[in-house]
Structure formats: C-alpha cells, structure tokens
Amino acid sequence: MKLPQDPIFIVGYPRSGTTLLQRLLVTQPGIFSFPETHYFCVIEKQLKYDRAGNILPSCLDKVFEKILEKMELRFSQEQEGIIRHSVEEKTLTSKDFFEMIVTRLLLDLNPAIEQMTSPSFRWLEKTPNHAHFLEHIVQLYPRAQALHILRHPVPAIFSRKLKFPFNQETPLTELARRWNRMLTDVEQFKTKFPAHILTLRYEDLLIQLENEYKKITAFLGIPFDLNSLSQLNEQNEKPTAGFILPSETWKLEDARRNMTNTNDAYKSKFSGQDVADIEAIVGENMKKYGYEPYAGIDN
Image 1 (cartoon, one colour):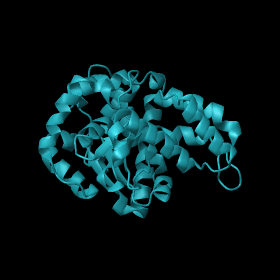
Image 2 (cartoon, rainbow, N blue to C red):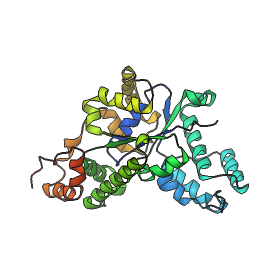
Image 3 (cartoon, helix red, strand yellow):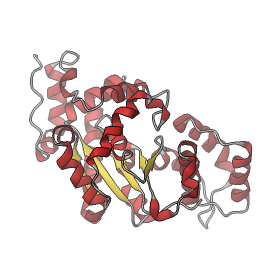
Image 4 (cartoon, helix red, strand yellow):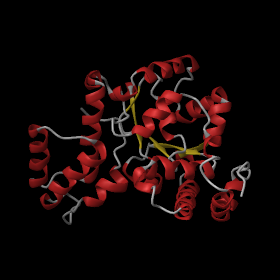
C-alpha cells in the first residue's frame, strides 16, 4: 500500500489536548489515525546510516525494542524479515521505515484502507513532541500540515507532573522550561512555513467547538461536518479500540470525560508558590497567547 503524501501531524505540549483533537478529527470521513509513533523524537534517534542515507543493520535490534516499548508494536516474523532484507540490500531510508510503521498501524485498525486510493483518505499522526521536528517533517512531506494545540501552561504542567509516571520526579520549573522551548520551536517553524501550521487553544476548542472546528477544516481543506462529531461519544464506549494504548491510563480517563475543561482540577494539589515558580518562567509567552495568571490557589 502506498501512503498518501499529505499527512496531518498534531503536536503540542503534553497534556494540552492533543489526544482530544485527534479523537475529534478521526470522526471526519476519510481521516485515519493510530497510536503515537514517537518516531522523530525517539525512534529515528536510534537509527544509524550509511553514506547514502540507508539504514544500517547494526541498529535494528535496538530499534525494534524501542518500537515495542513506545508503540507496543511487534512486527511479525515475515514483516521483520522484509525490513531486515531491505536493510541488508541498502534500500531502506528513515522515511521508508516510518511509512512501514504507519502502514502497519493503519492496517491493524482499518484493514479496508488497503483497498482505498490515495486521494480518498488522509492519515493523521499525533505525537506531542514532534513539535520539535516540524521542519524535518516538512522536508520529508512537503504537503504535510500541522495542528498545534495550546493549553494554559500552569494546568498543562500540573497535569503532566501528576499524570505521567515518568515526569513525577521532574521539577515543575524544568517542565515550564520545556513548555517555553516547545513554543519557541513551533514559532520558529511558523515563521518559515506559515502555510503549514495552525495553532489553536484547548480552551477555545471546548468553549467554541463549532467555530474552532470550522478553522481546522478550512485549514486542512476538508468538508466541515459538525454532525459527525457525535461519533465522539461512541469512541468513549470503547476507548482502547482505537489509538489509545492500554498502558496509557491517563488517556483512558480523559476519553471518558469527553469535552470537559479540567484546568481548575489542580488547585487543591499544588501551592501558590508552585504557580508563581511556573509563571515566572512562562509568563511572557503565556500573556502573548491571551492566558491570564492561574488564580485561586492560596499561598
């Protein structure tokens, strides 16, 4: 199966609504998605190449381990054999490998895609940290489009600290600096490739869904079908049946809450000093995007 070359990428600071946006978009006819690949931010870093840019055999074992860890994806013996043969023949580039992974994930969830022609569907990849790799992605896919979603940084950072087991020991100030770094990378990309990216706010999506959805569909050049969003409730019945992995318990909780703004849910869990420490770092960027100080926490 040959993948269409006009993919959609959803990026944004973790815990900012990227999964919600992904779930909204796959309700639209002809848009298909799958679990996060972490390809450009994790998997690709494990690859080694020859001078022509083809993947070397020596890195494959570690790469397969990392794919299993990040995507819970294990290739069949036949599929792994095809990959290893292509590498031995020096014919497999990083883009080729990425598309083999995407194809496998797509077909696992939607076998009928194999019979579709390229213009009849688009694939959507959502990995928040791919925000740091947008220029590289557009070099590979000149017709790619990116949706960048923002959330008030204080609840986004609090949520990341609480929900992610791997961030619970990370200082809030470091998570705040990561929020700034991601925004800087997105803004630099937007300066170079303004037609390839649309930024929206999580809060606006919840409050003004129809207006925000019109912006999204106009940007992507797809029909505006607000009625199809009713399928979101059906997704909630079996949230693990799509692109949420069983191990991603924080996403399962979010899926069951549907369109609920949880920005105020952290006020009993953190102190006013925590808020002050975060806003001392992100304050300038926060105001730039219309966010007021996170109020309501006593010192």
